[in-house]
Image (cartoon, rainbow over all chains, first blue to last red; front, side, top):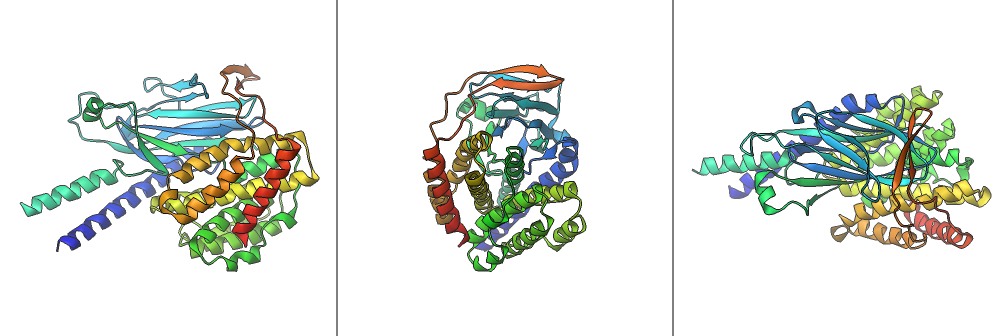
Amino acid sequence: MKHLRTLIALSALVVLQTGAMAQCRAFAKHNCIPNLLPYKFNETFNAAQLANGEEAEVDLTFYSGQEYRLMVCAQSILGNVNWKLTDATGQTLFESKAEDPKDHFDFKVSNTQQLKVFIDVPAKAGGGNEMLHVGCVGILVGFKE
Amino acid sequence: MRTSGWTLGLLALFMAACGGDQPQQNTLQADPTADSTQAARVRKTKNIFHNIPSPMETAALLKKAGAEYDKDILNDPNNRTKYTSASKQALNLGIYGADLSYASVFNNTQESMLFTAAAQSLAKQLNVSNAFGQETVDRMEKNRNDRDSLLNIISETYWSVDAYLKENGRDNVSALMIAGGWVEGLYIATQVCQNHDTPELRQRIAEQQMPLGQLLELLSTYSSDDPAVSGVRLDLEAIAKLFAAAPAAAASTVSTDNGVTVIGGGAPAPTVSDDQLKALTGKTNDIRNGYIN
């Protein structure tokens, strides 16, 4: 009986995780990728279910000679997120604050560089006793051929 | 009491499933800056992604660098029947994906459809038909003369396969596919460079050191418990050793040029010497041949 419950619980976990990630893919596909136009989506799936108070980061290689659109796309349940782009020395090159949100940054690099994107989903005000909100956050890159 | 414990257990599992402590995408690491007090106050978890440029972007860069199309260097679509293990299928799904991108960016529709069929066959064997099924092939066939539409469908399909694998907890298969695609991209670049050796192409080859670092980090999150991933990681480490040491990080500048934000500075453009190019060409060829045969 105990084994059966464990099996059912694990199955529930898999189903829930798969469902949540599939939802994230659908969100990115319908709500984020279309906004990359006229840039071509670079095909890389950087999306995760995040909760208020969580952070994410990704290193991205940007090549000289290309124009890029960097986009951070979050489900509204999370509220506006803070995100910034920094160089290899940690210097901030672009920043979007939750109080003045921007969903994308268009730019090009003169030399090929690896830059880092930090995302911070602000914690809900009022302490930790509120219901945990979880939503999808996508980091997408488009380029011009 | 037992029922309530069972309910709590399911609730805990539900919370974990909704983005808590389970690995998301490629890896999940605790934020080293978050102390225990913070952790008690808010769950401060940092999600680290590893981003590898797609085969499509690599192919577009090669074209811009003046590379030409050479179908003879690509993996024979008929080889697909040789790949019976899941690891070989995943690696070659990435390889055929890169070949498909290369053929499509250079507008070779006939070969694009052959690589599509080969990749779709491997996707089927890997049970990712939900993301890359016959309807995708039909859409590509319908749009075979519209290059932009074809490239968009290829991009969407690559992304869907990657996402589908991750959604289903098969991140290691996704990692092998990405590694196969990256190796094929470097293989194509080094092969093309043999007949079309330009500073631009050498620069693009040298720049592959950056995504290679990311790819190695990605593979290191799986290699201890997956022999196939571990083997690929060793292969890529051998390639990494052939690149020159990465130049020291330098601060960037931000300016505007004709309304476009330009991030300048950073490290100077890298290149590869004749000896490095020869070594990279040979090693990449050996490793790639091991994957396709």
